[in-house]
Length: 280
Image 1: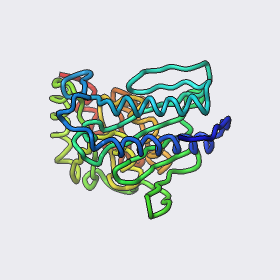
Image 2: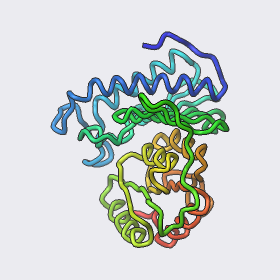
Image 3: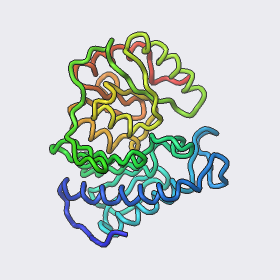
């Protein structure tokens, strides 16, 4: 349990607190993960039979909320599992206690604890703790993006630049509803012949951090939520990538598109006529 409190309102102060909390939640999840299985009675479904939530998703969010409230009791908190609560502060914490729950459940490594801090509507700090890899991605507004890897120190992140669409490795994801998946299948079938290849990792936050780290060149997905991309979107942006939606819209549930300038526009123009924001 953390003993310190903070009243700092600067991005660096928020980032330190968010990182401490994300690491503690990650340690808890890693310790308790072996007790989970796909047959566990601690698993529920949400929007569809394929949209799962575990008891550890809930426990992680409860831990994160408790630590934020302990350090900054007046702040608001938006979390995936419990919604929004808190005071009238201009500061809002945006929390995904496990991004990539299905991966977590199956023992796959593409899952993360994601915590962002928003001040007056603008994300100023973000942490994505990819727990199984021992990787913590961090960013503060105007201060760049970094990767801290256990035993390897700190790396400054820059996304890949100068990559044309035909040589781009593109990450994407799929929703939970059958109708949405049908359309997403059509879209990816049209994108695949025009790019180097497609990757589907199963975590929006990890995919965006992969853009930041140059592990993929671009990412797009329909239907992600604010808590999925708030922290990782800042990491990607601070690493030089462009974040947005279609036709000048901001990144949101309609579509999140992320790539270096130039590739962003090429992928955007490929996606627009495919109408990826529709559902069957």
